[in-house]
Image (tube, rainbow, N blue to C red):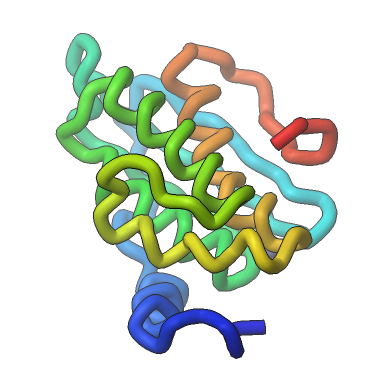
Length: 151
Ligand code: ZN
C-alpha cells in the first residue's frame, strides 16, 4: 500500500508505528477519549493533561494498524504544549490533507500523511486519533467512533 508514498514519508510512518512516542497511560490525565475504527480494528485511548487551554501532556495507548498508530504518535508530538485552538485548527488541516491530498497550512511532520487520500480505506485510520483528541478537548467522555463520521 505504500508504493506511491514518498520514501521519507514511509520511513517516518514506519518509525512512529514501531516506536510510538508518548505511548503510555497517564493516571493523572484531566481527560481521556477513546477512538475506535471498526473498519480496520484500530482502538486508541488518548490521555490529556490540561493546564487551562494548554495541553501540558498527552499520551495514548491502543492497538491498530501502522497508519493509526503513527498518526496518534505524531499527533501527541504535535499537540504537547499547544493550545486547544491550535489542535482544533490542525485537525481541520489534517482532515483536509488526508481527504484531498492538498496541504493548506503549515502541517510540519504531519505532511507524511498527505498520501493517505489515495487509500480511502486508510483515511479513517489516519484521522482516528484526531477525532479522539477533539472529543477529549471538548470534554466529551463518550467513546468516539469513525463509523458514522462524515470525513
Ligand atoms: Zn487502521
